[in-house]
Length: 577
Image 1 (cartoon, one colour):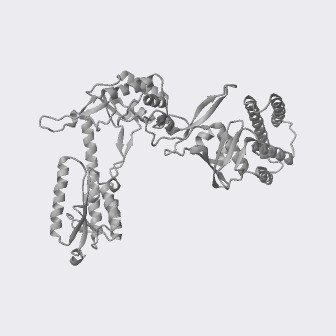
Image 2 (cartoon, helix red, strand yellow):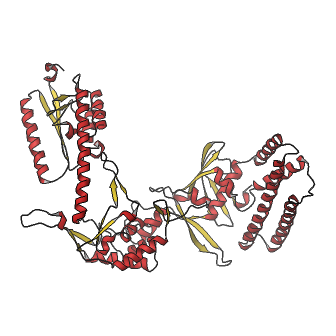
Image 3 (cartoon, rainbow, N blue to C red):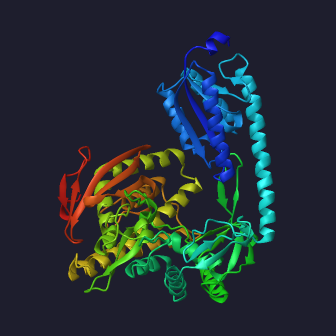
């Protein structure tokens, strides 16, 4: 770059950063900014437009430095045309970030001047020299990371107490020696009585058989405050307290580790056997015996897959797999016992957002005078409503079901010949499907009788007809196993298969077959006001519909909020087809 170009009038900003907030580093930063002011005086063509400083923040990831990002945003708006920083390692210790941002700034007409390295990014060799210096800065970061890890290992041997003391039940006591110097190896904890009582209560409630969610509700009912002084609890907080051996008087090491020295990201160490525990010098809140008892109780509630522990198994419940809440957490749902029918004793089930289960509901917190922001207010969903809406929607959307069956039968007919044993297997499978259909129908008839949906005489008549068909199908199944079975014609077998498949897609029963729902239904999203978003995958495309249902189980009223939904805008249970 020509000297006259460098000496033209420039609108300048300064950028500085220190990686810790220690006093020595802070003073160094102040000295650095004074140095910049002296530099400004020497360059009369510079006009200072602003100063950007990041304190106590790593330089390896630019996105973690708020003032750096603010500077880049201001540059994109034309706030200045020259950034002056002392050296490359102050700008970034990540080669990719350094080059990415300097190239981006160059497009906006903004140059960067690294004073100590004497690099101007608009020079012909500017990017080459910058790449070399950025690579050296990144390598230095790697070496620093290795030194920090080695230092941590030494600190563990000395029993240094890590952390900022942000733990419920204790406050951190920093040790200052006679010379006024802080010695982290002598740090300890001091009990905070009111908080310690809360910790003891959590351990006692759990030992008495109460689960995480019930403990949260009990703490909120008793208006117990968490570590930041709020009456707000969730299952994850309870879990962390119950697994923290600090409460039994131990220092714990190796619970997490850094995965990348560039972004300083940390991940939890799931191999608990590798944790290191050293006895501390502070008063325990719970006994070691109780802590060990709690760990054994927790182990019984989870299963281990590889090195991961999970608290629940996979479910084949279609609604648990498909329901997602519209609240901020977009949580899955849990199946709960809603109520019991007083007349029949039948248990009625509902589904509740897991965010409410873990954190508490909007309704509960409002009733108890607690803050409600960020808490789910979607009501529990009755299972019968989901079954009813699914039935109405699929009846409306899949009108030509019998046409699909006939097409399937024609495909089978084209693929198999009279002497093909696969046809026999398909025919036998269709009979088995018939048997399952009739057995399910008997169960549904009994439920309808219990709910009072059909009278005694009609129940007896339908039950008898179904049992006769079931017996007939069972007899057909036995015939397949006889050696002297007479080979039926291909047309007869195909006819039986068609009949079985038509029964399978007959949506006149109380529930839609799970296999069909699992295949066609993508997701169900409950909203405020009793509205539901249903997403189906039909012919390879996602189709979305909004609807709702009101009324009682025996007299439901379906409402459609989608103009393109081919069903009545409002229909009752009797209107279903």
